[in-house]
Length: 115
Image 1 (cartoon, rainbow, N blue to C red):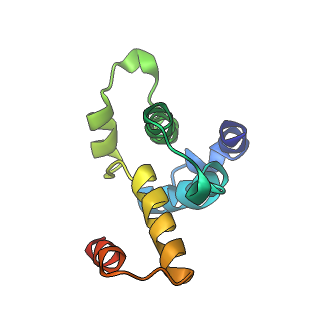
Image 2: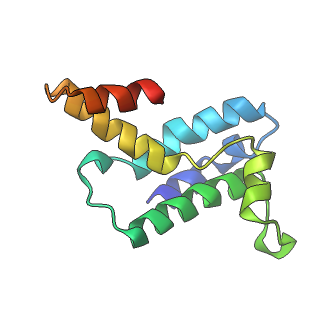
């Protein structure tokens, strides 16, 4: 579903717009679809791998990097000036949800302040 949404807006994400703006558009439009309800997911190691793969898939598509170009994941992240953030977004969403519902412990407050 998210890949279809990306393909639908591909001209916008791969255009000559500023890199910062394109990254914001991907995070706003595509990640919101991909991470809908993620605070409630039970994330296994396989799911983490799929989410990280999806994140890099988005960046590769945005930068028009084909698999035949043999560009490593770290080089892709350097090109888009990003780190692997998709799992961090899920964790922050979970923690802010817990704080919102009144489970405020020193542990959770400390984690939120570090981010």
